[in-house]
Length: 249
Image 1 (tube, rainbow, N blue to C red):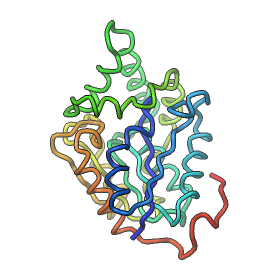
Image 2 (cartoon, one colour):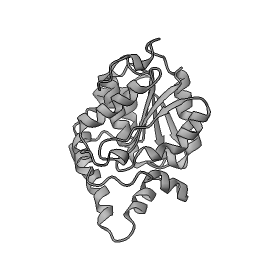
Image 3 (spheres, rainbow, N blue to C red):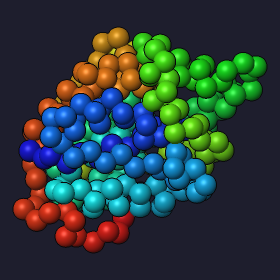
Image 4 (cartoon, rainbow, N blue to C red):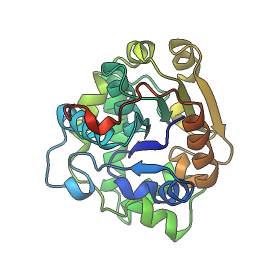
């Protein structure tokens, strides 16, 4: 079991999207760390790069009191998988949400084009994107959490380049801790769900009913329960506190 959890947000959002989970997890006694990626939220002035994103995750992991569960959603899920594969022995569990599509350059570019296209249509592009991603989250509270740290501008091309070069299958095969895959049942990013599960033998799949691509906003309580279950099943990698280790990514 671990009492430390690091959560990585999706593209153009920020750590504010985890407020529902943070509130519930901290109430249950967990330490929760939710960093903002470069180009997002409190780091909006920075340029998004793979090196910078992985370094941000590394700093959050080493700030944990013990080997943490690392979780991420969409972009955060891809980055969490990649970080976990590159750093054996530093985590106790991994939760990857709404990222079961094997990107590749072509699919990544298509996604980036779709996302930017919504900005070109007259009207409230933030609301269009939020509704497309979070199918059930229509309340103002969900909207405030999704873009609570502001919408990251100009990051999509760099994100597309980074995700498009990732070898998700190889990364999953290299991970040495229990893996939980989470998907909203209506998430269009479930296209390669079966292939992802084959690449990660022993991984647990949790599909949340009445949820879309941003499943933590659609089903905040259920998503939090999945995180808690994964934390309870986690296997600590060391008896030493994480803060005793190096802070490099």
